[in-house]
Length: 477
Ligand code: 4AD
Ligand code: MG
Image 1 (cartoon, protein in one colour):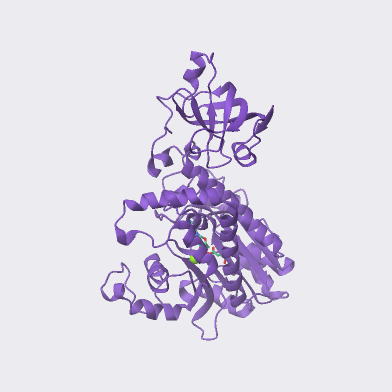
Image 2 (tube, rainbow, N blue to C red):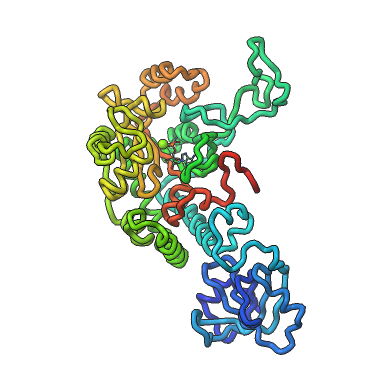
């Protein structure tokens, strides 16, 4: 007998065929109807165990969570809710699940509860849908770049540089924390450490990606990224995945065009390939929003919102224009912002980003030309001497989803910047070499993968779109 996945059986419907299907029991009703799910689709397969001599001991093992192998015939279903079902002739229990201790019972569990059961939560509809969409998005990322002449570059995970200059790094060391070797000055002597220097987990693969773009032309990275920022928010992880394309001969406009086209393309891919999961997630979100006050509910349902983003141009606005809008906005005048906007030069907080996107423009926004002193050292200085060619893509409900820039390609300007920020030029000798040998205009950006998964699935908390979230005080599993 041929083995099928639940998805194959529901799609191909080989009526009358003898089939074998494996999966986990979602529910078991009336000692007859098994709803079986194997993760291949959001839908369950109904298996009817209707034979006489099903042993009592076997029956007792068919509980929610048990892993089964069901053999039988695929027939048109008499019941409502499914078009086909399996008339079982044999049921083999791979492994039972004690109903008194199995935590994922067929009832509504809170997302907080499921976070504590992260090793089992993928057996729920919500998490299986999210993780299938996540997988599709990852495939879409590679497809987009591979179809558009980009090479996949593996940036190192262990680095000696702090690309973003924010100092939020996890140290990588084999020194004895209780008794590290000290140098003459009394500091820890990292020359005696594994790599002979201080090293950390990467906060961005950008600097290395730049070196490869200046040889391969167009590259992208897609890998784990680590930030030791103590932000307990619904949008921050200490370990997240970032996609960083980097392109030689691209200026900021070309960079913004690429970011917009790329993000739209991967969302369209999910619309085209994950309809069942999206419909489930949309319904989940509508149910969840029923308990919220009217003004907190989103104006669009999930799928409509995704289509809206794909079909409309992102609004491009300079930082200076944005500051004017914010300064004169109602919440600013009524002192509703936690961080009031008074002066040009203020860093934008997520409350400001969300105001611009959700209240003012009501569409995704690309802000560009930010003040130099609130952005990283590598961004290209504009002729005005005070702004840099930075861009952030802001999304409804999420805020910043992409951060990028045109890079400073002029050696002297970059050296001056490095000096002004007190960065050790010796650490960046190889990065400066790019400006010494065949320098050229180039640009790139970083997309936070979990943030885009959040947007596409409508999940409110970033901890629920990655299998095992790493956040302050939490590295279970
Ligand atoms: O804006 P960021 O810090 O930019 C960079 O790292 C650049 N080197 C990218 C580049 O130009 N190649 O981070 C890029 C994106 C953010 O827009 C956000 O979506 C995501 O990465 N991100 C995080 N996602 C989850 N948790 C965190 N702690 C994140 N920090 C940044
Ligand atoms: Mg940023």
